[in-house]
Amino acid sequence: MLVLTLSALNFSCLVDDEDEGGLQGIENSAYLIGFAKKTENESYFVDEGAVEKNYPVSILGGNSGYPTQSDVAVTFTVDPSSTAVAGNEYNLSGSSFVIPAGENFGTIPVTINTGGLDPDTPTFLKLNLTSSTGSVISDLNDTLTINFVGCQSQVDAFTYDVSTIRVSDGGLVNQQPESITMESVNVFRTATVGSYGPGAANGSIGGTEGFTFSDVCGTINVESQNLVSLYSNQVSGSGSVDPVTGDIVITYTITFESGDRLYESTYVKQ
Image (cartoon, rainbow, N blue to C red; front, side, top):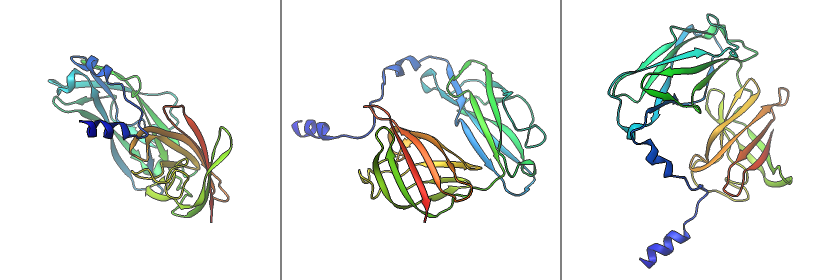
């Protein structure tokens, strides 16, 4: 018992403690419905004709996790802020869909007209969930933004000279050459994050090093994600790509129990 106790005391990680007290309230509650992701990027650089994509809407919780006993009908609307035009970038076949009984998700089908994407400026379609039978729409997951991207990223699998500062005091926490890797179309991953990663001040902390970001026509988005894809600390931010040099500047936050920390990383092509 003493050995087990000492082992527990010596164990530490970057994960904040999670409050499990709210779990009891889920029992026998209504099903909670929401989009599985808040944003999706659809990138096409040539006319491939009409492509159908299906965007999942999931049962996020409720009723102690038991499967639904009947179909859940869900309605949605197109947000008026959308810049994409129906019949040009996309087509919708309706404004409702069904999550079948016993299933944990349903999908909204959207036809993407790849020949209608602007090669210079991205447009977006924003969908709002409005109602569902026998369930509740999540306030945090009730919208999906689909970005239609016709411009190919200038970011590539180059080696960059990276320098990362802690914005609060300008302290240099990382400076070294490193590579950015491509994960999918216009989606990339860095090798370090803040002062963490190979060769950085705090070294490797396990998991997948760095963070994932997307480049939409020179505008970078770091969607909220687990630190090094492992810890509950969240990394999120934004940045830009210089259209002439291809150099990158990304400003992002890492959450910690002691308080959030803001970093800025500059990537200069070698």
